[in-house]
Image 1 (cartoon, rainbow, N blue to C red):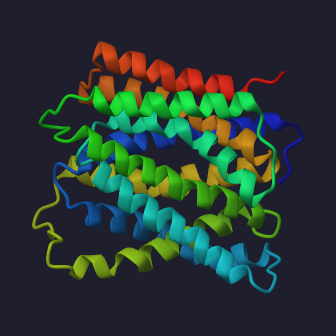
Image 2 (spheres, rainbow, N blue to C red):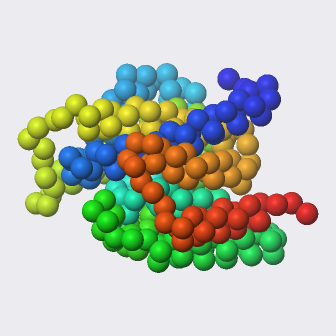
Length: 293
């Protein structure tokens, strides 16, 4: 299906950002009951199981080339393997709202990675905006107040930055592969690789196997598996297929807005005045970096 206008791609990317914003809330809620490795494996396995019956039809829409397997494996290593490992642990130490705000740096990190990898030129305004956004993230972390739900905001925010770095690898690689593989195939491969990657973690001594399955946390995991692992990644892979990488990555800026609102609405999370100012600096840096002459 080819969109007749960019509107369909824009709508897909906005939907992906909304679902990703909700994923921070669902993950934070589920972490109150389940071990992070249980949540990650559950969401990956659920998404992969739903797509597996259609694997044959999904595969026929692709045009693989020699060497693609290495790229696909690298994409899956970046996300979901490293990304979810960092993010799940980040949300044990920081609030969903702060973690969501850090995602605003992702488009800038993509731009920085494009310099050595894609040989793209970056304007002085982009570099200046990147510096402001990094300063805002540092300020946001330093201004974080330890609470019961966010016992170590600095550590949690550092882990979230590492998650964003992993996402950069996923975005650039998936864009390269999108010319030969359908969005559904890339989503299915990611979910399958994530299932295999996190299955051994269930056997680790530190992983707490649940003995009960309360409805609320189970629904949160189901949301992560169906709406986020399948829905959000499919929407993003669809959008990035028809738009430039930097333009598609810019939609990530919507995630902190959605996350902050949902965190306030559902988790009663609040920002301190300093955190509001730091968040404004992050978003201001992102805005400056994407302005055209």
